[in-house]
Image (cartoon, helix red, strand yellow):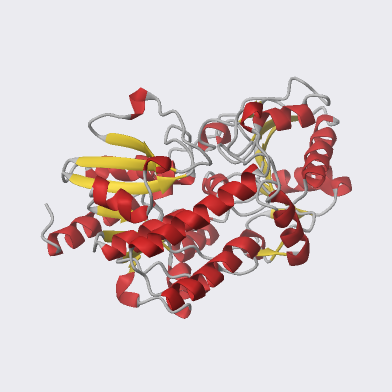
Length: 431
């Protein structure tokens, strides 16, 4: 049996980028050997784990039952640790512990696909958010607590420092690394890959351009594995069979929100005003129909209902579910930045509009002219009409983009990753 370990910010029954990846990867790995997946959930306090999530193939454990990352590794005894589906102190702690115990460590290189246009404002909003009484994944009002977000941030840093201590890391290395890590995490103003190298045995690289970027940032070529992105295997496999299912006479618009407020890019007032104005503008047109899909774990459904329902209480707002479920019934997508959900929209051949009120600059999809851009609510309706009526998918253009950033559209990334993982395990005499 091969034992896998990954740290995650929410339960695995919530759809996220990580759960999408493992939903594709685990069935393929299971063809080669028995697989047991352990999800370590980290939150501000201990959570209640539903009994049905623990079985012969999967375990869900809580970070508060362990003292540090090395303690987890020693007790779970994984064969493979996945360290970087998001860059944060917890994942870094497990990378350190895996290196200490010489456990096969799998990382993921994150390319920079956009830039923040107002770094000072973002820093201010992030600082204010540290005093927030809730965190993005909170579902209940009774979870509110004084400076809950700031206290959780400190907990994660302490967990990392305890892991350093348990691993007997060099003090100068700790100070230097912690400073770089804190600044990258706090500011979001530059690609943290330029400073933070997890030291993984294998980095999963999604495309040729990403590979070149990793090389330019000093990552060792022998540790880079160009394989595509396992998150999109299911979507790519259904790509050729995708059909337009929308039969409504109205233009079906799907607005995919982004947790800018939760991550400090926007103030709450700014978020509310932008979502409100877009919604109000769309419903004024009788030939438009709106559906809203918010982030599955980092946004609050009740907050969006308070924004949207005073305008029109019949507008559907969804949090649960994979965005691909909603794309089939949509004619056009409005979003705010390149993201996993937006890439899914692109691969589903949907025309896309980015509503940019100055939150970003140099977005990858805008630069590649694969999405339209709207900078004012006054021009939104005209851009919607022109984007939809003039939308022509240039197959070659999409193919080039996929090759550059997603390697192949064959839906076989999980197969490539699986073969590579078992090759590395064989080299370590692990069966």
